[in-house]
Every structure is written in C-alpha cells, then in structure tokens.
Image (cartoon, rainbow, N blue to C red):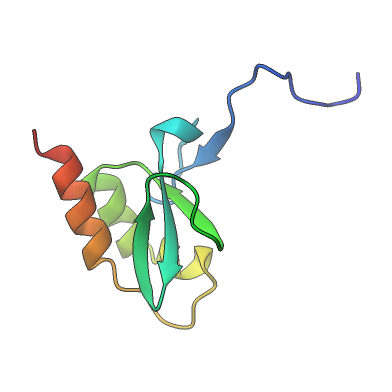
Length: 93
C-alpha cells in the first residue's frame, strides 16, 4: 500500500474549540483579517485558516483556550465579535 487516501474520502479537519475531528463541510473556516477573526463560509479567503464548529459552545472553548491566537500565530488575541455574531445568526431559526 502506498499510504494514499481513498479518492472518495471526505476531507476531515479538527475543530479548534472542542478538538474533535469532523468533515470539512460540517465546520466553519475562520481567517484573520486586520486583527479580527472573520468567518469564511465559502472557504475562499486567502491566508491561514482555522476550523470551528458553528456552535457557540465550540466558539467559547476556542476563545477561552486562546486557540485562534495559536492557530494564526498572532502576537495578541484576535477580536472574535464578528465571528460570534455570525455564529449566533446561524443558530437562530
């Protein structure tokens, strides 16, 4: 075996909040723009990305653990207000 993944395999990513692996399509990609975390729901923004479940519980865990600071290799904690608003809107019916 060459160690290659199967072509039909679904790509997986790890949530920076709860640290559980999930399908890439189930997670929200987040990028850092001008010191703030910005949701990248289309997955097309340039730059380093971090993935989080689109749930407030995972977002709170990521902020508390300073996971975005580590993921983006930032010198200071990024602003997550815009990301929080996006997740709250997604959770509302």
